[in-house]
Length: 257
Image 1 (cartoon, rainbow, N blue to C red):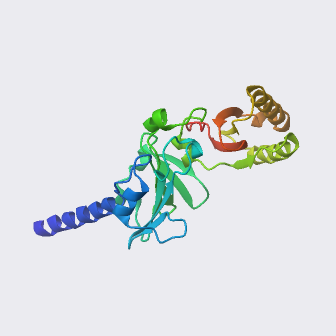
Image 2: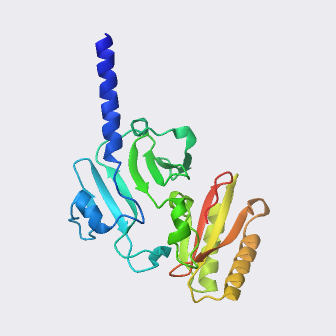
Image 3: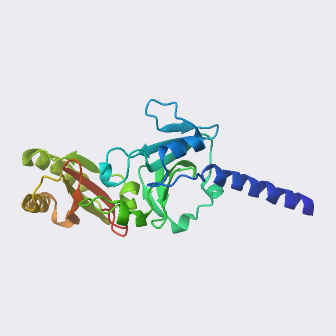
């Protein structure tokens, strides 16, 4: 009996170790180069030159392009982030995830994501507690040295939360139309907060940014019912193109930026 228990424990630890090892790649966002990835995983056979596969998993890697693309001041062909998709069922307990210590964000009735904001990994899980995808992003400390001037600080929360609305800024008439949809979608959301984040291209003046912010605040205040006016409009910094991004998340969750 004792031998059986020892054998069972050994098998369990072996399975857990293999599971952890499958997802323990020596790939570090903002450090590992494409050539280093190819030494580890071989060359990609996909048209995007960014997807790598084994018997157990598929890995898709987002590489840097031109300087400051996406706000990162790094050379070309460096890993920015990557996602791992298992080809077989992996349960959360096999990954050693402590569900109670993780932030949970529900996407729909069938899936949610889990993350520790001090970590750089995000786990996507379905309603059967199966891990459907793992994403790894740059660690927070990297933003101090690798972010381009003018771009907002990198925030892992923005990768975890899915925007409720995202549209490029063309003119006020077009943006006003989209803001009506934003307000309509937010109505009746108790214990939720609406974040409207404005990103502007480099050629937009400080005065124009303030005008846009005030107009949007005025628009939402007049469109939303009094009981639904739990919103904030934020200047998110510089992006390649000016856009409005909105999030609807529980009040107790860390805010996006």
